[in-house]
Image (cartoon, rainbow, N blue to C red):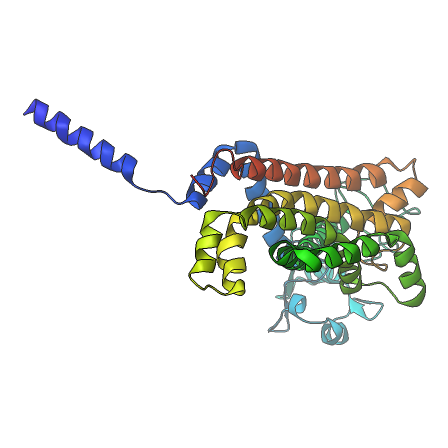
Length: 364
């Protein structure tokens, strides 16, 4: 009986080893085993998702107000109606922190529920804080205020959402154009490739900074305009990688077999070659996000980026350079930027190792 059990166990182990595992699952397991990159991915994903509901946690507008038996939800409205109802009004908008203190002093049933951090990114605090801005860090303002008496911590958090969202959108659009054009050049080759390469080379010679300066002199920059401009100047890089991958993959036997079976070019490109050419695309994506975040910060620092009073890391760094003795204006945005970029680099390193074709290849 003992020998039979051993034989059965050995057969079960052999069957487990014979179970096929998809290459995606192998790469995902490898990625999860790289703890530094995997935990960075979880943290950054969590923070990015939370950043879309920041007004619930960091805002100068109340979440709920009970006033004379009625309930109001100012965080979901413009605040204009509440400003006409409540007494504490500043610049046409209700000051809910003062309203909360007023209700406490009245000893009534009225109350105000504020976010955990009750300061907004564009709120001017001159009438609430003594002295001239920028104000140093304190218990109420953990990173102090900037030169316009706006809370630095809230601007950093909102700037995080803008920076990451901007970088992801630019990377997606640039990869969409780059992959499409690179696949076309690599697959059809010949005159199409030669003409396409010459056009790309001419386009790549355009000076990016000069274009930004010209556009700024004509139009008011905004999020979508900057996305279009950055996309127009960042798609060329991925084109070369995809073109090279298509040149290599289209010489494989499986492509010849698909051609001999009468498959259409569209099917060969998107169903056969492209899935086997995704390694450089996915591996370089985190580093492209890092580059796009740095580009936005640089443009904001130079004054060619998002218009004030948009929360921006670059604008905070610029204020820090103009007030170099105010250490928190330099340390806070640079620390936030450093931690964000280093976490994305860790993710990129883990993805690059997990997608290493020498370890897991589709052709094995």
